[in-house]
Length: 290
Image (spheres, rainbow, N blue to C red):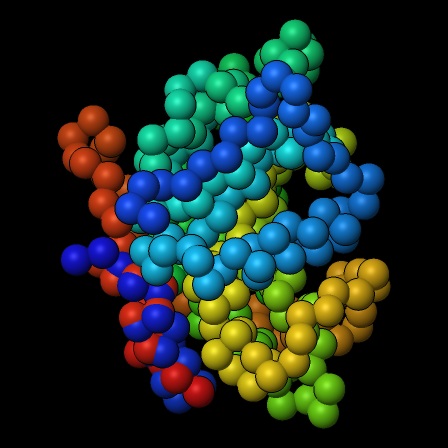
């Protein structure tokens, strides 16, 4: 049975504390790639896109992946299967595997070509039954991950590491929701994960290859709280510069870093078929309702 996000959301919030995979290739003749010069604006614009389409996104789709080359967006993909392998090949997106080279507008760029080659067997992302996201790599190149709700992971290893804790996210959403004037902009930004595939280049908009994952279960969770009464009106102020955000991330650090949950077992792809989440987004959240 595929994962249903409604049930997952309601399950999470109750705790005490299309039939095909959708993909949009942006590299095609006559199409002008969209680009950004400000990371905050990039995040805001892509979150706005997700919010406008969320009611029509199938319940079994748990994430949206944005593929970037420096400040240009080259592809967008909705994630249905529990795990996805991302490498530098030219393989088409089949729901379980994505070759970044397939969608690059300029493989004559030696730096981009070099970085894709170094990805080797790539990196793998997987979502577990609790809505947490894990990552591991199958290459020697350094890869870093940053979210606004946890400390930066400077180096993803060969063993799975948790890069997004849905329980810690819920705690911050609930805490923000208790404020007299909840910062909706900040809460929605907490649902994003930034993956720098060239961590030697610290600025994402200068990095030859990087990704942003929008956790749709987290986005749904916010909409089910009292925040749903407020319109989503992103501001130009960067949440990463506020003391409130730093305080929230710090207070959630312990629960995030010392989570008792064990990492999922990443299966060998040649020996198993990709699986959808056993429940959709809504069913997963139904378990833990505030």
